[in-house]
Image (cartoon, rainbow, N blue to C red; front, side, top):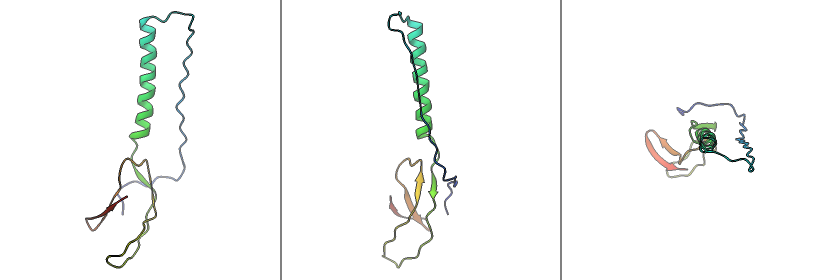
Length: 98
């Protein structure tokens, strides 16, 4: 059994929208430029945090299966917020990566 929390199957639709209206006929002084840059940096940081810092979990849990020694099996599952390879283990022994 996995130590990862099982969350709902509901998908989350997140849209990052940043509207910046700049009147090009006006001069933008140094402090305004700094303020606009900080707004963009915060928006990008928040998006990166949302995208890459969420905990992985099984959206669809793999089922127990039996297979003869040396045989192959396909574990049907889905991992949400996948952040790399999945290492499968059985009784503490590595079986393969997906």
